[in-house]
Length: 355
Ligand code: COI
Image (cartoon, rainbow, N blue to C red; front, side, top):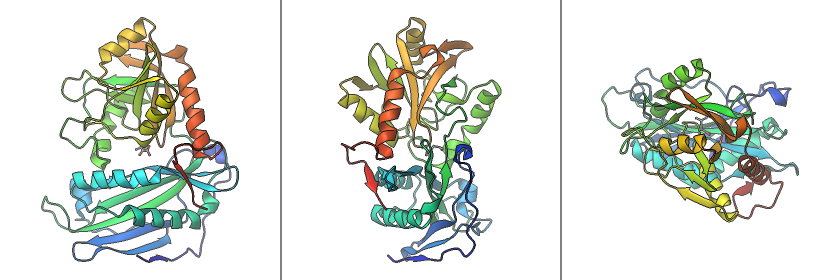
């Protein structure tokens, strides 16, 4: 499919200070759009100046949340090259999410081609400082104006991009996490595995209450028994207990994180014991109390590797790794970031130089 380019005549001013980018507030000059309807399938792929999109107030996504998204990054390497990290995996996951909420799948090759064109057009926006990158948000929304509760016949896929620094204002300083035992995020058979907006809407009140108590995020327990640790919502979680690295298995209520998958692979290659298994919060706090919980960290595209310095469960605080970034967390961060910025050879074939 041809991707038409209508470049802006009025480029915006780029951020002057790369240390103050924050996350998700600055957007580049252009965006990519592709239309879908049942008769024509995906058509009219185009890159346009970044601007508000027009939506009918009855558009299905505004009423029943039929929308999905992805998050990935492009990196500016030391060799001035532009690199993507496992981007095809994001398009595969987008299609898994699409199936769960009855949206049309998008050909991953088309998605990749469109993405590369967009990034290269706005390549001057990609920040260069270590820890900064170009955040990419592929999004699909149902746009048919119809108030019946059923899958829409018309969709819009778009990609917006923007320079970012670290997701948490703490940067690489360990965050404090509240173990949520009142609200739940997902249940087996629900939509927890899909990257759909409603999952995130459901997390806002618990996150707000946790923030008021001084926590960066909540750690979700399984929705049935509130017993097993699942994920943090913006990241998957890993715990290092008794020399074993443990993360929740993908049983349908946990997002299948691409950084999660990368960490599992690297940890195994380093010869460490890596387990994807049910881990009860009881086991975590017992290990924290007797000194066997050596580290805890989250993984995600936005968060990369984010150390957890404290968890609080039923009003009891458990400090982890003396509140500092643990040795393994640091080593994993260094390894993944070095691969992403193409600073060291990539034995996995995860990075792609696109320009
Ligand atoms: C990401 O890590 O890219 C995410 O999508 C998580 C979040 C910012 C919603």
